[in-house]
Image 1 (cartoon, rainbow, N blue to C red):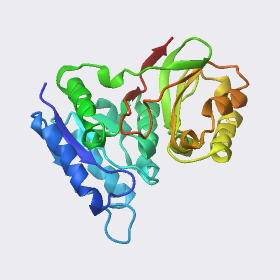
Image 2 (image 1 turned 135 degrees about the vertical axis):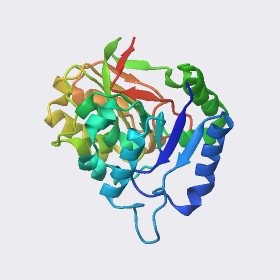
Image 3 (image 1 turned 90 degrees about the horizontal axis):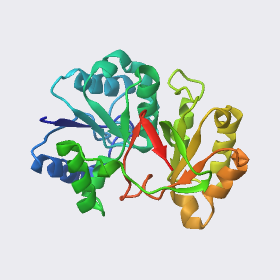
Image 4 (image 1 turned 180 degrees about the vertical axis):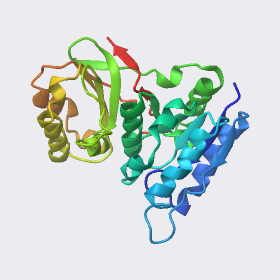
Length: 279
């Protein structure tokens, strides 16, 4: 199947300093024969933090979901602003579209909203990894999936810190961004789910407060297990996210850990909204 991709930016606008990496990422995909379009709303104007108002960003991405020739919509952004587009997206159209949405970090809000509103899986992954420090292997595995349906990009080792197995539809992503969905119509039903959690910033007090919120929402009583990715600042400081999660969940849930989901350039991909099993 011929693939056609679009680079979009639903969260904070990119800075001009990132242009070279973005264009290198597009070049990697184009060299494989994939057509790549760059959105009109990628870079933030001087003095602004988004490339356009939320309604305009959403309207543009919906044109790509409606375009029957587009197979992949790669969000290259991150930051804080992605949840602003959620009320302006047409979830019925997204559910009917063959285009797959890719994004990570703040795009956790969009990935989970799409699953919650229309049941469609999306990919937690930053396509710019193809032009990063692990670009050779990232490019090989990304193109292996896009061109031949190989699943190396989605395979990663896990180690259990509590329990021995877990299975269910996986939701979540960046813990801070996932919690922006709390109390909104865009929060997935957590019954029977595997909850993926990762973070770039935050030490024990902040991450602990996020876990407290999940506990107070009753999430830990409804899910089947927790998959922990990297918690960059905590990991660098030597603090243990495993101990913190086991404390907050009182050891009642299966908990597994992987070093290959998160904000690192070597991070693999997860299909949010699809069945996930590990044992």
